[in-house]
Image (tube, rainbow over all chains, first blue to last red; front, side):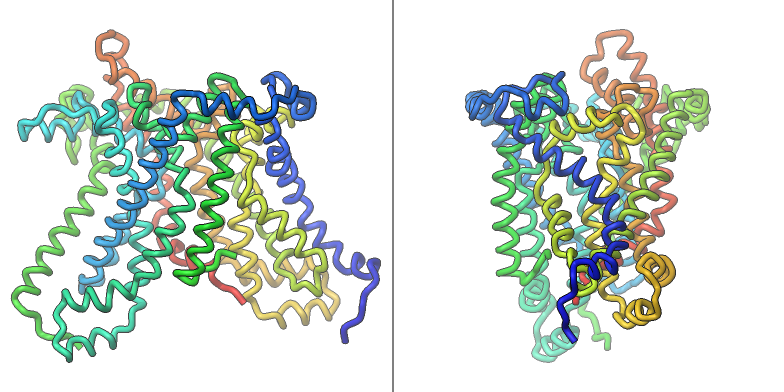
Length: 307
Length: 294
């Protein structure tokens, strides 16, 4: 049955498939691979007016740009901010949806269950521009509804988005607000997948709700928890550009400026193209190692395979 | 099946219902508040009287944004980018996924193509190199800058690829033997039976396009070409800045646009709310779509 086909026969049969892929491949070459080539400007002194040709004609400076970054006093702070914000988001982004999923799983009324799921992840589908606009309004120290409420309780107005002490908490909380529906649905799906006969057996043996929770429910969804955590680790240098960019301001840079927003300002505002690309490359290298490790861990502990 | 509940269980259930209802209220409050704000009078909005229902009900802010040409223009740009972007992106997804879903013996170069796509999922040039490319290939400051760089959605392609592979092999094999070519098989057999999955992918592409704002900000120099979200960001940021410094008169002036901003934000939410029933129906499908594997 198996014969070696000549290249001509193969081409004759398979050319439509090559044609189908042609448009996507052209776009990938231009908008994915060409920029990858452009990473070399991290080792050059690229002049913004240089254009595409500049990729090949700019002067090589070796690791100068990297030395420059590590000497920047802001850079260390930016790394710290990124890690702190990302880690807090990962932790809160697991605990809150997990608790909600566990509580929702105890609800017997199917309509209430469905309605809660439906309503809770509406913010997930809105952009950070929109959510940022809403947050700026409700958290405003002058006339914002949250501060009006705090005022009723006799509390001084808090400038949630404008003071370094509160900005990280605000970022984490609003991230949970937007994203918790998503993880909640994942956890809830895992919860409904637990074999119900286990609960019945436990009840017969006299186990109460707390014991059932500890010995059946939590172990039952542990793989999902591990999975979400591990995949989150791969994202640890992505503290959420869209969100931070729409919520931060110069007053809170010291606590809220993250790598991606820093890359943006250095590159697009200061026009230091090479330096910006070098920071991006540095981040990508670390991210790559983290992602590779997290996929390995995911496979080992949650038996999850991406590809 | 139900066992009798103990009194403590009953207390728990009541508290649970109350707590979850509170959570829903908290998570929806900001959206309802912004809607109420958009329907309130300026003075009530500034005094902070508006909570979850309009105070001094008025349609003034909506009337005002109806007279703003830049709002309309950006709305139009967004509609156009959603339409063009979705058609192109889904088209590319179907073509690429179909070709790469072929078994190796039908498509000898398959492996190499798959790698070309996978590599782009892990590596990227980053902000500035992509920006230089977009500027150099002649699409800078045009709607194509919002569409072409993100037109190939590798993640969607892999989702559909896995879905196509889950279809019965005999379905396409018999057509091939009967002499049909791949374009015919794709258009007449594979696409029609994959409509629900394609709708899922299309819907999420639409939402992504509607919500994108950053590409508009960096790839368009002309603010008159801004899509709604990018335009909205400018509006919000100008108010944001003024709330940091209340001393200048012009800042006070902008603050009084609070209700107008709220109205514009709400209009940007409406399309999402309209497709939301579909979104949430497909949400789970989307999450499980990729898991169909051989």
